Length: 204
Ligand code: ADP
Ligand code: 5GP
Image 1: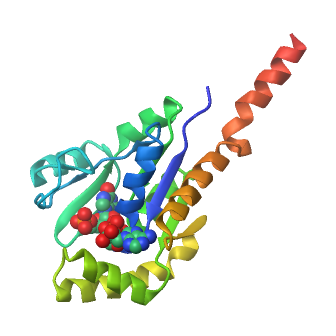
Image 2: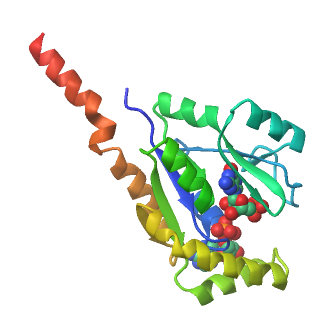
């Protein structure tokens, strides 16, 4: 069986990652999503187990001790981590899985799983990013200014990614991500077993 592919998605806050992924999973329910375990309090409207598992600091530290995380980060005083087993299970079961992770987390996962394909979501411009963050109205002006500063550092690291998807027209950006996922199924490293199988059968 073909192994599943791992797709890392990063981009500055407000670049549209969540909006793109909601649309993508509606079109492609066969693709899995890696649910992060995090210790920050749940925000209004968030649902346990949808994007995040909200756990205690104690439980998170147990996961760390037991080597259950592929990577983790501390962001604004809270832990955010990618549980290892769901990712391993997806690959082994031939399922593609998307991991939404910050630039540091993506770098750590690439070290452990070099076959991961990474996609950076770019806003069409810095001003559009600011407008989207302001219109989303989920943060104060101070937090928006801070996120705009962090965005510059993140965008400077977009060169570490395999693909850049500019989120200008939403539907076009979703199609771009889907085409990266579809095309990566054709890569040699995902299909070596087919070559081996054909050669083996030809000899027997
Ligand atoms: P992120 O998850 O990267 O922080 P969001 O998905 O929350 O970003 O998007 C930030 C804001 O921008 C939201 O209000 C969203 O509706 C809006 N948005 C996202 N993509 C587009 C787009 N292509 N065109 C216009 N607005 C968009
Ligand atoms: P938020 O609190 O706004 O949901 O997320 C804060 C930051 O943590 C975002 O940059 C988000 O992409 C990142 N993040 C979410 N899950 C993970 C994770 O599992 N690992 C890492 N390293 N970062 C994560």
